[in-house]
Image (tube, rainbow, N blue to C red; front, side, top):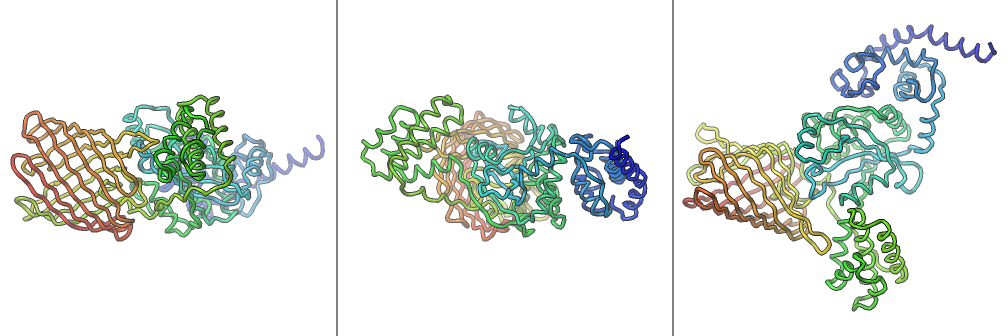
Length: 598
């Protein structure tokens, strides 16, 4: 046997001979109970949340963290195979931590794929990325978070995005929601170039993107990357409310810097905007950056252009007008520049939506940009300013109010776990979007407790039409309320569609809303509802709505509602609301109080 092979075999036998001693040392140091081991195992309560057997070296490693630790030491120390697919190379985070805690080295391996990734990524910094909600997608109304691993390169587009999401091809929205709520999908980590994620969220889904630079050190970033490598192709069950995209980013961040306790901010559910605030409160966030979606950019161009220029943009993007012909219109040179830029953006938007062939897109897009370049440098589109999501009110709401109704004056106490309604201040939220779960309002009067409202689910997407966009507006509600005759509780299912106009400051809508009621007097009808809101800066909002419903069996019902809300911080707001109902008589209802957010 050659000398170097004999030496290698001898060294391996030495390692094997000391494995029991290393396990004994780990036991004496109580490493199986250390917080970092539990972080590496994703085990908040002694049992791992990872559901993939490939993540564990012991048969019962998911439930037996001590046994998994011993198995890890044994494999790292004894296994002869140390190539790319070996456990030695697949678990660099465990290996680095154990070597530090036990003050030993497990030796070298030939982990070429892992080393190649480190070289390619050149991890130096981490950025938390928050794509906002997509106005017409209920599944995205909470937003999303993922991490970006930045290198020493100035451009961030070639950085790597670390994402966690449910893996599914499901197209049925109700089935997707049901399975997402009850763990019907497996979630996977993915690692893609950042520009691909931007293309998906900012361009394809028209979602504005905020970036939060984290102050992690290069060593902490490298610790995060080591663990990300361990999670490749590893699955765990995806739960929409808690073990979701944002929750898994918290694990990675705590592994990078164990002194962080981000997960402790959450108990029963994890909502993406709240995770951003958790990073803020832990003092990890540095600079913040905003990347406007294509939709936001095109709406900004609409605000700068007159109707003649906007008409030209539509003709240019559709190919019904040659790019050079814009010079023949009664437009200033700057408006011509804006028009060509907007036409290029709109052309790309149409292509992304699959409404244009790649060949037609490439030719038209190139022609528009060439004509724009010929006009020389001009003014830059004014900066699109939107309140940062971390300035929004918190997701959970506790409400206390005094009510004055026709025949009673109850003290009202309400609780809503999540998230936002059309009457609340929109700063930091997507204007026109509403999503509420289990919004409960109780009344107390004369030692009697009554249910005033219990909304199981309420969604709204009030998406204004514009020159470039023609979305539908819609909303739905399922739950109990007292809006139907004689101040009595009834169950309602309502779904409406219509149209809307406006912007982030002022909006109005018109909806046709069929309604089915059950309870003390079952009925069905169809109604017409008109409403709108005004955001008075970042702290106040007025909201008005009126509607009329024609029922099959009972008298028609008319309703007028007005509310005004002053939000003094992300933690609280004062409000009052007036409602007028007409159905077999007139009912006036007023309540005023305070909302506490947390």
